[in-house]
Image (cartoon, rainbow, N blue to C red; front, side, top):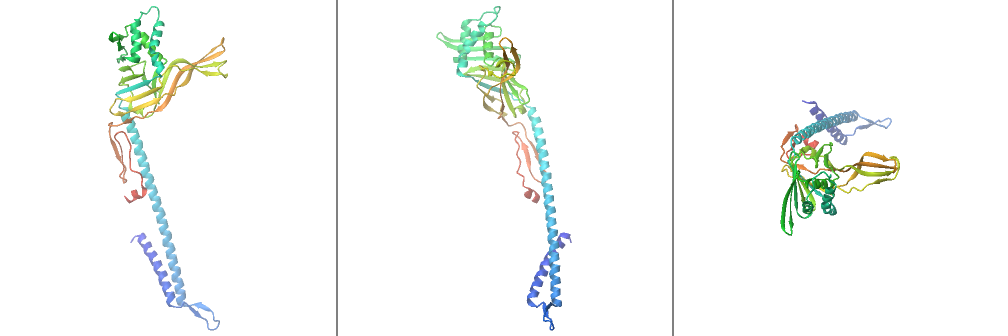
Length: 380
C-alpha cells in the first residue's frame, strides 16, 4: 500500500472520528454532577470523546498538510516540465531559424524588376539633357547626329526606348518613334557617337549613381556597373529596369534595403568654418521619387512600391578661404525600407517536440506551432 493511499485513508478516518464523536455526544451526556460541590465534570466517556476529537483533528491536520505539500511538489514538477518543454521548443526554433537561414542563403532571386518614377518635368527635360551632354563632349570626340539625339529624347517620353547591357557590361540602345514621314526605328551602340550623350544624360537623372544596399551594407544592385544582364526601358513616364540573376540571396530580402543616389555631389553649404552656423541644404535635383521592386521569380512573392525619402549625407568637406565657406560633398540616401517579400516552394522541414505532439515546420519558409497549454501537456 502506497503512502498516498495511507494518507487518504487517515483523512477519511479523521472525518469518521469527528462524525462518530459528534453523534455520540448527541446521544449521551459527557458530564456528571459532583453531589458535594454541584459542579459538572467530564465523565470517562466525556474524556474519551475529547481524546477522539483530538485524534481526529491531529489526523486531519496531518493529512491536510501532506496533501498541500504533495500539491506544491506536483505544481513544481509541472512548472519544471513546462520550462523544459519551452526550452526544447526554443532550441528547436533556433535550429529552425538557422536551417532556414542556410536554406535561403543557398537560393538567389532569378530576376528583379525595378520601376523608377520621376517627377514629370524631369523626364520631359531628358531630351534637353541629351543635347546638353552633347555640347559638353570633348572637341576630339566624334560629333553626334542632332536628328538622332532629338529622336532618342522624344522616344524616351513619347515613343519606345530599350537599353540592353550584356553580362560583360557592353550595351546597345534600340528606339522607335512615329514621325510625320512614318515609323523611325534605329539602334545605337557604344561605338556610335550618340551613345555617350545618352548615357551621360541618363546618369545625370541619378547624380551618376544609383545603388540598392542591404542591411549588411552589401551592394545588391549597381545600376551603372552592371555585372548581370540588364534591360532598361522608358515607359509611361517611368523607367523600368529588369535584371536577370542579380546575385541577391533570398535571406537578404528578409531585412531592409536602402537606396543611394549621387556621387560626390554638393549637399551642404556652410558660411564660415565647419563649426559655425548657417548650414544650407542644397536642392537634390535628381533621383526617382518612387521605386517599385517586383520579383519575377515564381518562388518569391514581392511587389512593393517605396516612396523615396532622400536625406543628404556628407562624405567630404572643403573650406574656401576666399569665400569663407565650407562646401560639404556627399550622397543622398533613402531608407532603410523594410522588405515585404514572401517565399514559397523553397522546401519543408519538420520537427516534433517530445510528449507534446507539436509540429514546427516551414515549407513557404513559414513557422507555425500549436499554442502552449501546460495543463493539457501534463495530461498528455
